[in-house]
Image (cartoon, rainbow, N blue to C red):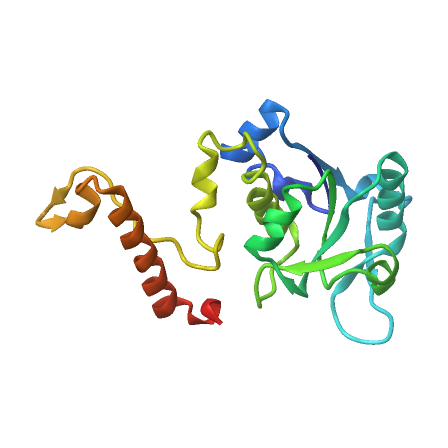
Amino acid sequence: MRIDIISAVPELLESPLNHSIVKRARDKGIAEIHVHNLRDYTLDKHRRVDDYAFGFGAGMVLQIEPVDRVISKLKSEREYDEIIYTSPDGEPFTQKMANNYSMAENLMILCGHYKGIDHRIREHLITREITIGDYVLTGGELPAAIMTDAIVRLIPGAISDETSALSDSFQDDLLAPPVYTRPAEYKGWKVPDILLSGHQAKIEEWLHQQSLERTQRLRPDLLK
């Protein structure tokens, strides 16, 4: 899989994409991630990629020309399954989306910044707009990193035990059950006896019931 991320502030992506599971996936050649500095595609001698908004309001807007140049260049080199714009008014990112995108061949993510981007980019160049929550961040770099992490960790080989990802929260529209490790008792706080019983069928039944209970209590909306 290849993911191309376009950003006006690429430094914000350095740490999230160069550690832990994402880094291991890159080192193995499972995931190929390229970050493109939008400022490399402007003709402005000061490398500016933003300008004031027509009509009203404060705040700067990412210009259409450098964005079009970088997207056109990348599209001339390969076909993309999706060109995503990280936007607070996009559709919410979900585990189902991560599952689907983990099977894609090429993805492109455009990070919003400042007041937003020239709307013509959204109308003519973007295929999907995604948000990670109902709030506004300084830019789309953190959402891009979050989506990349959620997608890459699902690619076969990214995680040593691939079955681990299948038991994550939201994979079956339920929250994950509680987990415990040694010691079995600490300060009088005990691990549930069922988990120490060795009876796999009963353990699985207990885990499923715990998932249902936690989902009903914490996220009842998922059960609808």
